[in-house]
Amino acid sequence: MAHDPAAIPSADTAEARLTRRERVREATLREIKGIARAYLTEHGTAGVSLRAIAREMGMTAPGLYRYFASLRDLLASMRADYFNELADAVAAPHAAVPADDVDGRILASLRAFRLWALAHPAEFALLFGPPGTSEDSPNEDEAMCAAQRFGATFFTLFDQLTAQGRTVDTGVAIPDDLRRQLHLFAERSGVGTTEPPDDALRILVSSWVRLYGVVCMEVFQHYAFVMDDMEPLFEAELRDFMATAGVRYTPPAD
Amino acid sequence: MAHDPAAIPSADTAEARLTRRERVREATLREIKGIARAYLTEHGTAGVSLRAIAREMGMTAPGLYRYFASLRDLLASMRADYFNELADAVAAPHAAVPADDVDGRILASLRAFRLWALAHPAEFALLFGPPGTSEDSPNEDEAMCAAQRFGATFFTLFDQLTAQGRTVDTGVAIPDDLRRQLHLFAERSGVGTTEPPDDALRILVSSWVRLYGVVCMEVFQHYAFVMDDMEPLFEAELRDFMATAGVRYTPPAD
DNA sequence: AGCGATCGCTTACACTGTTCACTGAAGCGG
DNA sequence: CCGCTTCAGTGAACAGTGTAAGCGATCGCT
Image (cartoon, rainbow over all chains, first blue to last red):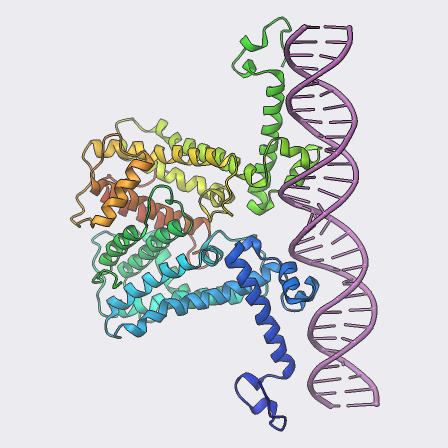
């Protein structure tokens, strides 16, 4: 906190590399987002309101427009943050798994994804639920970018798998139209620095669809009245679609 | 329209079995929902507002509270309607498929589900998206009931399949905890008048998860920037998980 | 010291859901 | 046919919401 007045501001710590103005700006920006995050987790996406945030900060709502172009823009910025945090959360368990155990890392990451979603249902809904009215805000690009970064976390794991030639032969022919879409997916999503075989792409996409399906159902509580605990189903699905990818399944550590 | 004044109102057509008061009430109720539906399709769930509906009807917002306990209640009532319509939409193609062709009927129904979702994205989000703040409205029960009716459409098809002993042996052992959840699912969801084998339940649930996954991803446009056309992927997934259920896949008619 | 960018406020508009007290008309029993 | 009840719908009000425009003040740099 105490800042040496003799020091040149632009040559200090990494945090003070910005001008004072920029620093306080960054601070209030974080404060805004911090309060917005609290509202999101407690009251859902619809519960995030500029006026409520401003009130809690001791300022008025129009003042927030110096920081965000609109409420939608604030939410877009938050989506970017959450995507980055989710990417971290999904990469975090790698520290506990040896680097050469790709199977273990994949399983750990996919379980981390589910756990993050369960621990942050409102945030998950914001990221993976239905899109709002699609008007592009300044921060929408950042959200997209962060989403891509999140995807990349899985893609690198997947690349390590295909590099080992581990993906199982499905035995089912891939129709031409699907093949074209898979190639589109590969080039646009940034997966496959080394171009993966079509079967592998097919398995990757299918696995993601299945993971997305179970987790969505659990978080959105569509089976709540019909199943007590979704974890057995999740693990069963995990085991199934990981088998198609040639990944050795091991039950969760607990 | 012209009504014989001599006829006893309570012994007329099925529609006029109600008193005049009840009839006009039902009429305005339908008008409310009709306008609400238009707003939903055009502006999404957040775009449905009591005041806008009232304005369009030439009345004031508080008047609507004679018909619905709250905005949430109106939405719950709409969910019930849409679930029923979706159930119809999913059963509709059965008319074009012979009754003994269970495979054809299942494929047709699942494709109808996707097409309905694509044609009604906002409605789909209302039914299958993240749940709102879960305070129970009077019409919430009806929505639940309708959702069950929708599920039953698939379950009867599935029952016909298991009755023929068609479901393929997965070869994978079902863990005890999953088995317990599957049995819970079976008894609470009303599937299986004749108790289906565990493997079949496993396949049913897994298939639904995968169907839900692809359709959600397509409707919520999570692959929009990475794939042009989701139909090939949908058909591939359909083919895959239908194979596990022992269903003979045939490509769409077009 | 002055000047310009930025910040936050005030005011205002146009909305939203919901409650309460009230009017007016329609339906029903005598 | 009259009176009573029921109920649809209104007006006003409360408590919120996002957003645009204009105005001071303040901060930081020259």
